[in-house]
Length: 384
Figure (tube, rainbow, N blue to C red):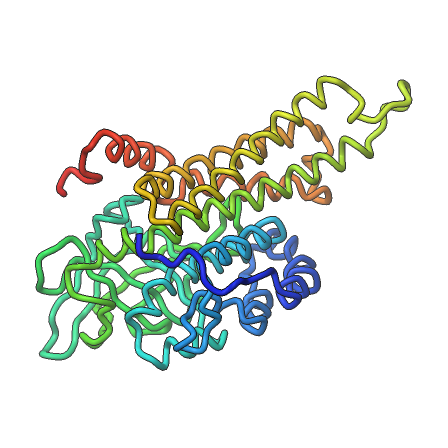
């Protein structure tokens, strides 16, 4: 696990709070309702220094670590899930770009003027991101052509660049990674995203047809992209996904608590909070949220300390977080009753956003299999 966990202390800045309060929050319902990409929010995050949070100080970034990034994602997830997911995928891409991208790209990211994302999942291998079927073909001594049908790309058509996976160009191995500029000739977004949740994150299929890139666009060594994906990108993505789920969970718990305290049964002259069954059910949901927070903190500490169990903890945390968010969302809908079905309460939007983590690769089922393999001394992949 090579991803930096901690760095100079970073607190949720006044700039982040201002962006969440004044821009991202007020637009969240519109972003969800219209399925509109949150450009204003992303711009505000760039101006607040948040796009460059994980960029190294040598590149002009904040040089912060995964713990700080998790705080930011958690804060934003409860405000606008779409904006948080766009930033989450950007951070996952930056873990590679800050190591291997050209200096001008790294500096643009650090300055908050460049949004990136991952383009891993493919139509031919679905959520098995570790098995790309898209190709990279030599085209002269200095150029390659990329061909692929990507199934899900967050910020599709909106990102300034994509960390793009393919079969190796010429070397042995399972995968190579490339820096593909947005707007490259032959790169196409295959339809607008019209989804159940995270409706503004522009997560659409993309295709590449003979997209020409210089061989220097390789991010790392040809054929070694899978190692980079597993050791650098995946820990970041899994931990931040857990932070996302925690942020949605905490917001749902807060909305539910408010509903129970403020809603009265006039014939009994009592609030819903005074009903034993409602209290019992809420306590169970609160316990789930607290357990997730403790597990996330323990995972970050295990990574920071280089503990042997860190690898399994990283695999476990997204699975736990995804299921916790889904269960708390379902419980919140039940406790809030008919009010939760109204958009103005904010519960139903978070309910829809909460379910996304279950099906985002690696899915809960895939993570359970990985954990079982790791704990039973088996390789993560059959072909390994």
